[in-house]
Image 1 (cartoon, rainbow, N blue to C red):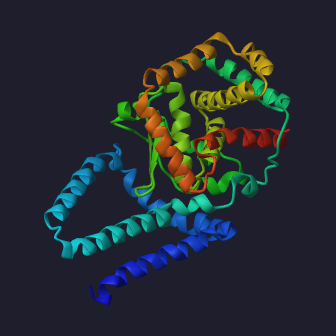
Image 2 (cartoon, rainbow, N blue to C red):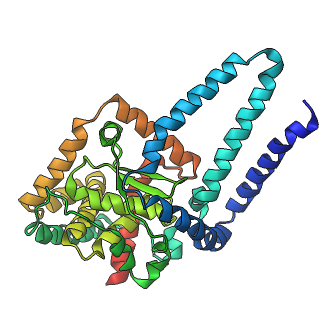
Image 3 (cartoon, rainbow, N blue to C red):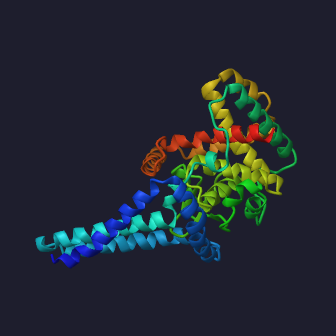
Length: 345
């Protein structure tokens, strides 16, 4: 091969190296990319994709799959030894392009400052009693809201964006890219995979599983829309989702936010202090307990090997993007909730 054939690979590899070096400086990523470059890019892409009621990314998956099969077939048909290396170069260039697109369109947000720093939250180890106090507050709110709601029916035309617009000024940086979450046509597939929602970084498109319990759908929408705001880490997206729901005008949405917090706080107490966990359960009203059971029953119904495989793949993806705890990082949302609760006193 002539040296000019190597030029695209060298340029792409240099760009990947430059982005890798840039991502090593979180303050630069926060100021230059996450607060300036990314919102400008994502706003334009999201404006286009939100014009469509269905998930564009979901519709493109079978098309891209067929195109990939065709490319593999063509390469297999033209695979004499003299072309093997050329095909390898093409594959490497393609993978480098995909990686650059992912990092440029969204992935660099994994390297931004942690939310506890940008919001100046005092995150530190706390006694189980503080977790219990916060849990009682969320449970009390959930009990009050549930008494006046039909939690089995999702309100029509539910717009989560107003929750982002109503966030306190300190959170303003997370309400700059307007968007809306779309229901997945293939929700049954994602149910078997144990996935409540998914964000497409290439199309700036939040999607949610429309088969899950209705009362959990608003907070799932808010979570995926948090990714659209450049909140990449899962624990932080859960935290922002709760804050968005609690600042929404709809009681149904507020209930959804409280319920996600209750689920995480219950799990934390179960692991750290079973006695406080039992005490907290005594505060939960029967209607709220019924909703928690319905949510568990739904996911248990689709439990199996496919969910295990999906979890392992997601775990690998999170670790590859700097979340060393993998899927366990979802649990660290409690630290952010506790710090916010303390700050609000």
